[in-house]
Length: 232
Image 1: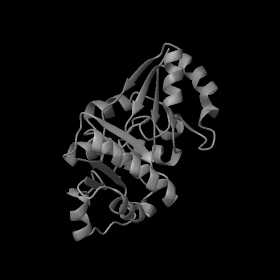
Image 2 (image 1 turned 45 degrees about the vertical axis):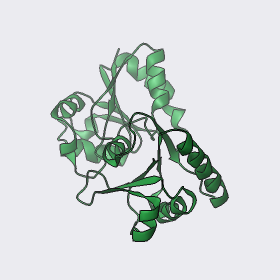
Image 3 (image 1 turned 30 degrees about the vertical axis):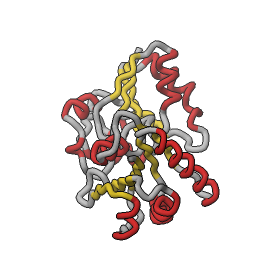
Image 4 (image 1 turned 60 degrees about the horizontal axis):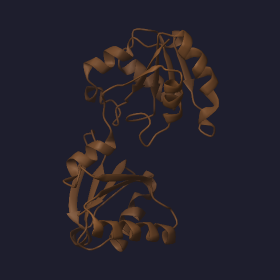
């Protein structure tokens, strides 16, 4: 029965140096991959000089609308292959990305699940924020409609007043500016907001300031991969 490896992918294109040699060496031993996006997976495997030709691998792309569609195939392959890998499009699988149902199936089949070391934008942003890393809540994407977003931020604000928890969220890059403006509008003036943009790239920017300071100084925020963190 196979080992099931959870494979991290650089969060900045071409930043292969963010993966340890041990992770790359392990990936080199795998020829069957379940992936979020086949094109990204192929490009990544070529970039790490995988010794097996792409045409000789099995790269199985999940259906975005029905990610469980390959579960039966996965259960079959995991009984016959020595190693199977899972990779999302960027970062680590199963954290703000699909994959958890395959991990659960692997546990159900008593398959060994092995997470490999690699970059997570969420954890890297938390590390660099200066906010509480002992108690935090990842919200994923916040509501798009402003009235729903306002209510969500009000609940976060209430929780900030009760404890020292860090609240983490992400947004589709083209809505970054709008979310940032609403964070300044609805969060407490003395709350801290950390904005981590394009982590692990040459354009990486991470800054933590009080809401009042962000209002005074402003921020030019484009369509870039960004993590927002809120705390005391």
